[in-house]
Length: 113
Image (cartoon, rainbow, N blue to C red; front, side, top):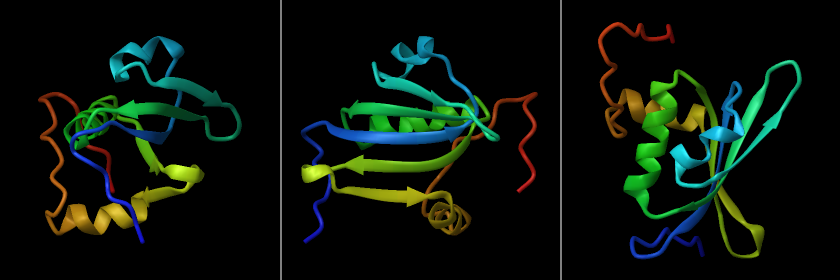
């Protein structure tokens, strides 16, 4: 049986984005651990406790505002099981307006998709 996040207790998440965020961004993302993998396409991984779904959405919006490409969002569960949401699963929901994205601030062009 799949476990669903609880609104009253923090859950541990792992968020991967394409690009490089330095360790100094940890405080901006609620104290999450920031790690970086170098290679052909640099990847930053944020791992740590997220208070609730609203806090998670805030983090995803902040990554969006930084113009970073989301690779995956994983909720780390009991026994290291996790639920992974990849961008190919999110795009149809965004296009169907089932997931709302924040409006871009003036002066920042949207990426072509």
